[in-house]
Length: 255
Ligand code: PGA
Image (cartoon, rainbow, N blue to C red):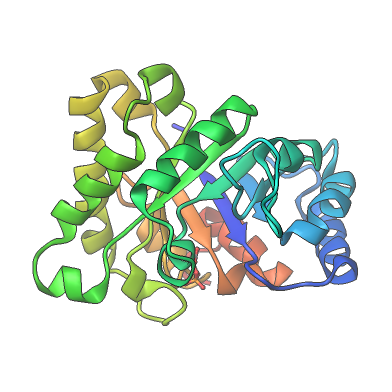
């Protein structure tokens, strides 16, 4: 099973800062074996410069968002093809900040997934419940709705290209991490949903990341859960040292 560590920089880093980070990351990971696959998601302005620095390395680049149309009068937006051309292999889709701050709903996220796939990008589909939904015992219902509607009309050929990221909204940027067993429970539910909707094989092969206040301190415990295949990291991915410590979590546990 693949393991992936992805850093979502959100609206952080100028081009100069992003290029410096990419150079240092490349240097630190050069020649390392036995580490997870690594992805960074810079802001749009830095996508191409970062891709150029990372070309030929094992680190791949993701867009943080894309528009669902190919082109047109959508001021301020970027298409999947444009992100691909800028050097992206992946696109984060449906991040909770896009859902809550920019009003993206499951139907729109479904269109963005199709657009990303059509452009040859691998989507990282983010799903997760709010604190209120968790407290009202709605977690599984919310996850199920986000999967049903987000993946609506997509066949197994498409779904097998998608990475799922479970990010409980209450854990994002709050310092409150889901406990390893809370996260595992939802990851197992997601895998069960994939087995029913797609196939047992596809369910077993799908990479399911955990996101929400992951740090070098808690990464190892989260990653040791059977259905957690890596992490999507915000805050702790902005510092190259801390990001690399998470990438090397299996070597630095307890340090
Ligand atoms: P965080 O963000 O690690 O800062 O909680 C995670 C995310 O939004 O992907």
